[in-house]
Image 1: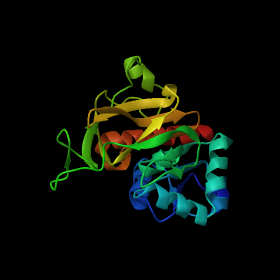
Image 2: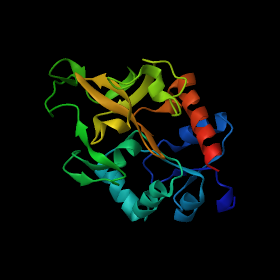
Image 3: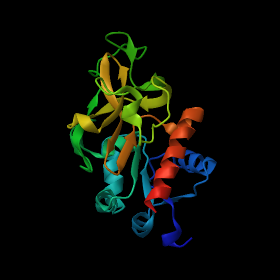
Length: 230
């Protein structure tokens, strides 16, 4: 496939759920290419940054692949850049996961842990909650937002308020600017940013590709946005 024919490029740095994302795009009629080639990432109409695992390891992998500057250039280009799970966190300035690590700095903010490192043998932290959060959790507009109007024109357009999405994480994003928060969720008594939108950059802490029909609805919205950016 010629670089100029790529609709969506999914960044391959060996730390992501790549096939699930590609299959989700295929379900909504969009061909996605998994690639670590900077020229393909630059030429694609949209780029998806996935990720599972540790923040520091992921940033090292991106540096080794020469992808840090490429992703920053994509963010500055105006075309859609989508972060998923760890990919969302990598877009921020820094993380406190296993020390302090610099992120891509596309969205000012930091990545924080839900709790102190102290837990019971059953995996429960003080307060009776588990970390990592693995499973379904609700997403809703941030406090003070005008209900579903806050999601109009975004990948969450048409999604019911309070719907459950599938999560798997121990850390959460804390953007500096509250206006970029697209939706929030609650865990361990913390209301945190579970999706953000900053211009052409959108990101989800949850996994739309593992969230059933409502997750596919997000991919349909992304497909429309990508088609509109062509």
